[in-house]
Image 1 (cartoon, one colour):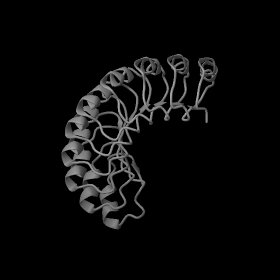
Image 2 (cartoon, helix red, strand yellow):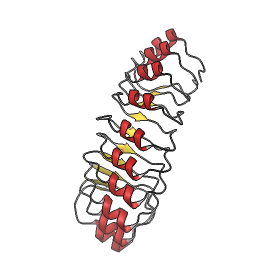
Image 3 (cartoon, helix red, strand yellow):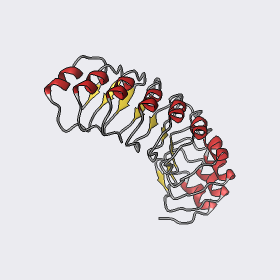
Image 4 (cartoon, one colour):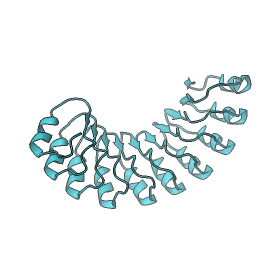
Length: 232
């Protein structure tokens, strides 16, 4: 793919509707960033490993999904700038999330926050993300403390994606049953104990369990009462 992008070329590409993938770029001039910010579709710049303040400010003006998966760290200033972005924001290169950074990113509103690279999440960061007014995707988490689960379950109105979890404790299941978002997505679960099924069946929204290869009769009976949409 492209490894350099003159501003004039960026300006031309920005006029193209739909998804624009430029993951071969490892650097981006401020001028090119300003041009790409005018693009209205999905913009993928996963090759960028750093953002200047000017580039971050320009990209924050983009209104479609913005993918910046090459960033493995985010300065407080860059986070505050990207929090202004009015579109889905994917930061899958982040493997950790400080409490302060979580609070900053959670201020975004109305669009998805995708943090599928995270491998751990503190209780305080979970508390912050639950306040985010948009879908939250945390598919990289293979484990999550019961305390952090309880905080995430406080999310309202939006979808919560936790596809990295392969098991749930009974306490975590009880907490997630209180989730008031429109969808709870747990496609990583491959088994469903009756106690977990009993709790999850109380979720009032859409419950997605597409990872289950089989389902025995007792958990199936538990899931049967209609409290919301069920996807298996």
